[in-house]
Image (tube, rainbow, N blue to C red; front, top):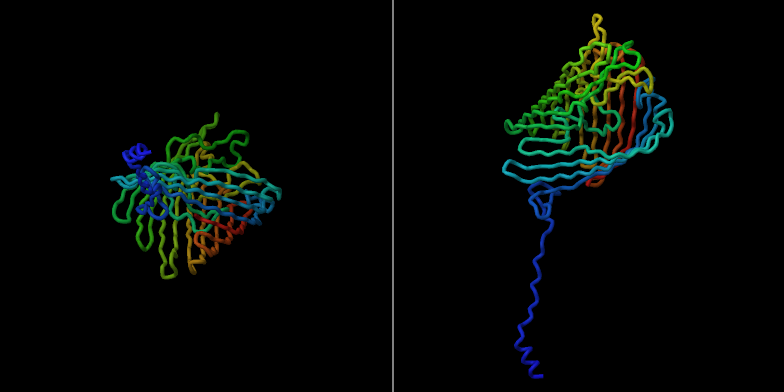
Length: 413
């Protein structure tokens, strides 16, 4: 027994390992703003956010022989759900933040009565709304066009007013001229800016037609933006290649260069309410209708017609020669946001679009009005009600009146 005691006395003392210091696997990244955290093991900050909203629309129209919702037989209702996921990652470098951004949209809608008052079924889709990389003044990916300025203050789910509002693929460089003044040159996808090329009445009445050919040149966009505490002013310009397909047996000058110029200004109105603002903008285009209006609705011969409702150009007979004639368009629009209180908000939007030089058969004007009231009882949760109205006036043929009312429930996180 004594031997056992002696052996025990000679044995080294058993020590309990010190408890490891807690490791902060997820560190807050305050430098990039609220909600950012460090990706474990890196110096990259990430923020994950999203939203879910539900809408129910009721559509009606007095329009006769107008496309889409703009015919009395096409009036109906529609429920719409969108879930959106945002992922933003930023790494600080000596040349500024290296940023990657992803915006995924999951959409579902259920239409009733959208064609001859019959059920149109349920549809779901997923799309990459935005996805881009920016660093040291360069931007590459899918993002809002650098031509665009004001893209609306209302929900605008059905009839967007006459202004440019496009997400597309770009490669751009932005130079900081001075505090608040930036100049940008951007190479942008031309295909997503195409409205189409149509034939004048009586041309190629068989299977022949002259639509857009393949893309030769991208759109080149220039932007000058000045942002200050009082608001912002932006001047934009763009080129747009209009290239028609050649149909055997028909000679036509198959290519012309379209263009667009836009000027917009936003003024903050703190004396009316916190976050209040009013915005105006105008666009003049030739052969580039998308820069004047993203939702231009022109005349068609009948419901379901394959003739485009609006176009960038038309093929006409000029002294016995088939010629490509570019559409002229101008638009003016604006919007107002007023916060009655932190819980109640009013938004208004309106615009006018005039399209000519497509011959009297296809010249037209659009007038848009929108208004909504939004109630925000809880932070990041809102309930809205909106009215949208569109008036379609072709140079020849019947006019159309389209009206949508909707309710909107949204949760942001």
